[in-house]
Length: 140
Image 1 (spheres, rainbow, N blue to C red):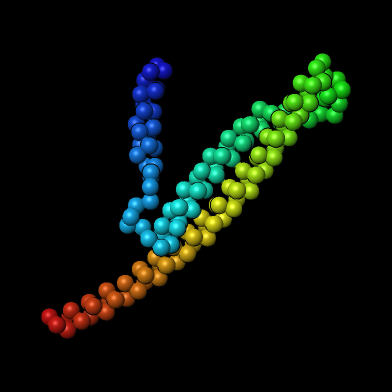
Image 2: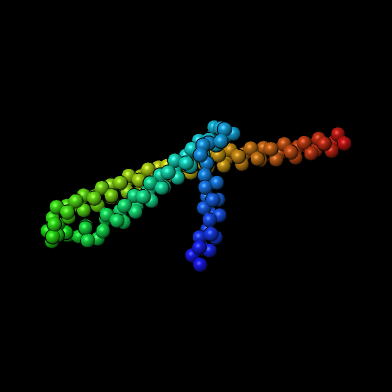
């Protein structure tokens, strides 16, 4: 049963790998290329945030941050190391949150700009298409 479940999931893994870009396609220029780069940077920041969250979950435990943890610990030096690890994990998570938020905001801004530019171009092209249809009727 487990082997069948693993086999059923295998195509999804392959598909995910195929969807990953290893570089920005040369056809993308200007804001489109900037958006692609911003999305890639945001994805990296999101992955770093997930790692920081996992580290926090492991190091920032309730017992470690409880009052008197060092005083009641069997090994006060080990307790101090655990507190330092918790502080480091929290600082790394805050840094990852700031970076992820900043990069997502930038990607969203660029996405809006690209979307607006494409919508304006599509509207202009639609008007040109309608105008050319009128000319085609006159020529025919």
